Length: 228
Image (tube, rainbow, N blue to C red; front, top):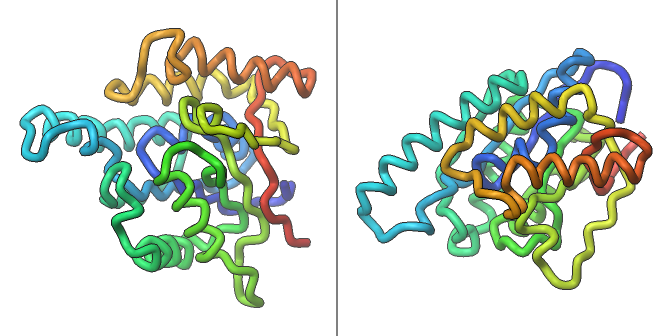
């Protein structure tokens, strides 16, 4: 990653993906003087309920509130929450998703993008990755020079074959507490240990990648594209 000040855009399929995937790294980059923004494409919850469920409406409202609180903890400057249908991105024309990404990207003008891995089990994650690549084609006027993909607990590692092969490890020892605090804002998304999206498992995952890089905690990424 570049050392000079950059604008960073995290493009996530669902609320909490932006924190699970790269919350510690984004918090660190903000501490180092970069500006960070988040685009969350999907509403993230309706696939769990029958249509018109009273609980669904209540949880959807709570999830919207969690987005703002979690990203405030990390220090994200602005969040752009959209409303694509949860676990049904394949029911939406891909061009619609691409155009929404392009609209936010053209407003933010980021140099660095973090997004999903192309082989995640979750269909929305895979479509998001492809839409990001389409929206960030390396034409002459494109501002994005770096694209990194992250893993999401209970999606990346649950696919077969497991193909996440990180080649970038970011030390988040100083921002791990901030990441966990942000994760805990998403009360509707947390699970009990040993589920991969429990706070304990999230910390264990960071410790695992930290040990790979001889650090206490780290987040892992695949470098998808770097232009110099």
